[in-house]
Image (cartoon, rainbow over all chains, first blue to last red; front, top):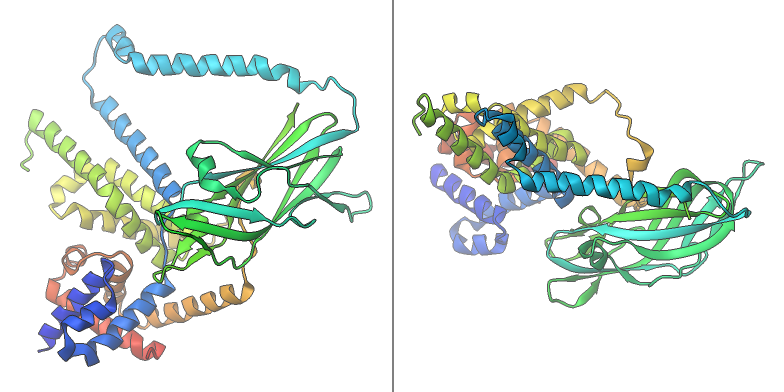
Amino acid sequence: MANNFDKILDECIDRINQGESLEVCLADYPEYVGQLEPLLRAMLQIQGAYSFVPSASAKREARQHFNAALERLELRSREKQPLFTRVFARPIAWATVATVLLILVAGFFALKPWLYPIVEAKTGIIEVRVTDAPPEYGITEIWVTVSDSEEGVAVHKAGDDGDGVWITIPITGDNPFELLSLQKADLDALLATEEVTAGKYTQIRMTIDIVQVRIGDGDLQPAVLPSGKLKFVRPFEVFDGETTIILLDFDADKSVTVTGGGKVIVKPVVKLSIQQGKQ
Amino acid sequence: MSVEAGNGKTEAKKYNEAKLASLYEEYYDKIARYAYVHTGDRTEAEDIAGEVFLKALESLKSYKERGIPMQAWLFRIAHNLVVDHIRKTAKRKIVPLDNVQIEADVDPVTTAERNIELERMSRAMEQLTREQREVLRLRFFSGLTSKEAGSILNKSDGAIREMQRAAIEKLRGLLVID
């Protein structure tokens, strides 16, 4: 009898792990509901406490390392060939190397003038840009609305007396903006820009008011946003006559969670990088 | 697959490499969840999951000789890496500031409640036997079948089913789940 119950419990655990609901499983075993339901509900509570979905970006990166290791193994196990044959057996690899070298050389000469400011000015430009990494859950659109108050996008300028001042960067780009279109096109988008006093800055702040997502072809639905306040303590400098780009890379995969009940929760996970000294 | 010298050995090696690659999509997530339950750290769990496949690739030669299902062998590697990680958790990791991913300020009440629940769950899990904990980790968090869990733990399907029932009943009593 116990053995039979254990098998039924085991089967229900398998079915729930595969996405079936507890109710459907219980309906198949009405004579065991009294024993089965408390244990399955306990299982769901235990699972819920440790819920974790690995990020697609981490998985993708690990896959790249794995593929690279696999390729190294294959290279080692290849039979020895004359040097000439080995070197010129992979024309595509050589074409890639040549292309990369060309880009690096061209890039060096293109950037060279930017290293030396040619205009004496007391101000520089700050550009705040956004980009994205792809999400899971079949999410097809993520619309982000940044607050248009003075706390929407702001930077903190260090003061001589240690206090400093917050400077609002007006939103000049699309607001709301759709994150996944950036990811698909491998772009970033200008969100806010302002000419500010050159000097040292210490923090960046952004306040997100609303996030709406679309799953598949469904309707756009509001996401639960426990907190939309992002703050980065990251020193950077604005140089005379130059543009400093603050790039906010939203990791949609880590930021968005869809619960079993279909509720979408967004806790923004954002990677910050700063490109200084562009003209 | 029989292993013989010369071309047979090469084919067996290629077969195992291909099989390992084919398991990646499904088992990366399962192994990451398994590691997360042990470590409580999402990033470490993802790193461990990636490391498992790299180590498996390096050790494919030794796998051939043991004759256990490759899935089970991956989880044994995962277990060893998790144990290594736990030993090293006191060591502080310094990350360049440019690469820090900073989460938005979350509701402190939600965070506190979640931490309390996790703490409560962890303490209750400690009251189980080591084998019961492993059964739950493999069945509940990694989503393996009883048969797969049994091959990892060297237990029969029946023993796994019995352990999981006993573990859930005990946890239910400890956590006072309705």
